[in-house]
Image (cartoon, rainbow, N blue to C red; front, side):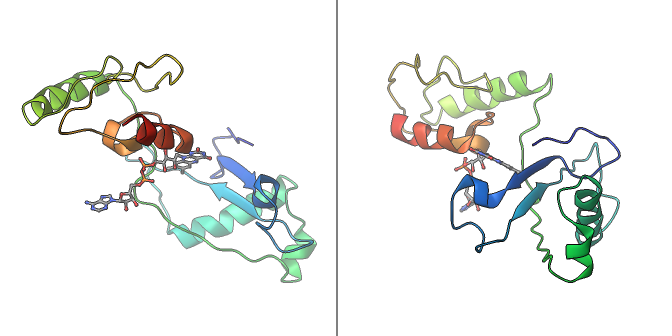
Length: 156
Ligand SMILES: Cc1cc2nc3c(=O)[nH]c(=O)nc-3n(C[C@H](O)[C@H](O)[C@H](O)COP(=O)(O)OP(=O)(O)OC[C@H]3O[C@@H](n4cnc5c(N)ncnc54)[C@H](O)[C@@H]3O)c2cc1C
């Protein structure tokens, strides 16, 4: 689920054991919450402090029971990733065009969709790859999901 309330840290929430069995011990649930920051939205507090706020938000939203929290039955873990999603803005296309053009001199072969955030795998023709090839969310600066990254590997 996605949380759009601006007064909350929580943005995207998964119940891990619903994705595949074995992701939580029997009779337990795993609640994974993503919290995003950028230079446009600085953190403003230590990740551990934010994690405690997020737990309170989960209680407030009814996703965990405060009696479970108070009786010590809720465990909390946190991971901080310094780089996450590519943010697209009006400068993205011209910047990518500049980089891809520069890389052509080193063997990159341009692709018809290399300035677009998405790839239509059903219609993308198998192309010739140069001696330099970009792959993945950060390599290509695309809005790629995991399956796109796998398909990109197959395409190459
Ligand atoms: C917060 C978040 C939530 C997401 N949720 C989902 C989701 O629910 N479903 C989904 O399908 N996708 C999701 N994605 C997208 C998915 O995670 C990415 O699209 C995918 O992992 C990108 O794969 P990649 O191989 O391009 O990059 P990565 O998975 O980031 O792999 C790149 C690897 O290169 C390594 N590396 C970097 N620089 C160097 C270097 N100089 N030398 C050696 N190694 C280096 C990195 O350590 C990393 O291991 C999410 C992404 C984020 C950030």
